[in-house]
Image (tube, rainbow, N blue to C red; front, top):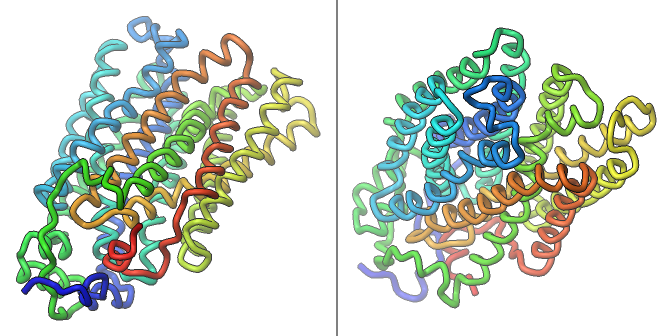
Length: 461
């Protein structure tokens, strides 16, 4: 039967929404955040590789500001198209369809990266790899949100951010250990990323289709089977009205505010985050550290970001999504502003000065702690709670794609600003992005904690 007005927004997936966390929830979440782990590894390992491949004649174009920016942004450009297009396909064809295929694409093109023969082959392979990574942003988070209990949905989704930073820290550790293994060490660094991808592909085959997607398509029997898989039981699932899958729904009057906030806030976050994250080894070298210590320092700062992600997991369902996101942007702005002012006054060898070195390290720690506590984790939460089932993966893909434009802007603009005006102004550029994200969150972000996805959909304005 079709739902009446009274049934709209109620717990029509009672078993899913009120289930106690179980091994099944943790297993599905782990397999779903694996794509984000691989993104963190890939984005961070290219930061290490950029300090190596410039010495190889076939890749020498990476030594130019444009070449370095293009290579740094290559995967991100692919993500821009992959997240939006494959997110839309995920809403059309189902969550599981691309859940498997995007991992196949990741494995194939990571393998091709290890045999790249010049700058442009590496650029193209990484660009196509980005399609798979972008797709996983939309698919993995959607599966988590539609399987998770309502009271702990935030922590499950925030674990996506944690996975990114575990991947990043792992990349810097691998980079540090392989740094002195020869001119082809960067190839070994990328090859290691294939191993977890193969394991994840095999295990993902057992994850069922989303009950919410199946019910929206009219397959109530399939929806009940998924509920039983996740919780051991199934309530009577009310047959929801079939919602049309349309990209333009994002811009309907009911959803436009959510669409604009989510896209723009994530955009400004990624302007600063990707620039700082990927160029951390280079920035630390400019500030006076040796090559090997800059890689080790990057691993240390990534570990701090892991702590920030854990803090988000612990607080996002208690404090709410909005306060946590505000905290994140505020910390980003303050830390980047201080770093910019220091770099303007002491542009080189800043770590050689005791007090200045302590301040720089403290601000880097503040940046990593708060950015991962805030939007670095809540982007996965908000993307799932701001949109209805028919365009949930599309909405997550929209935010991912717009954020990649911000990332590309940060990655390509930062080297140019540094080359023309110095490191201080490059960091100031990132600080302004953090401030804009803070203002957007204060004035536009809704609070979504503690409600079912259907309640959020019914009460959206």
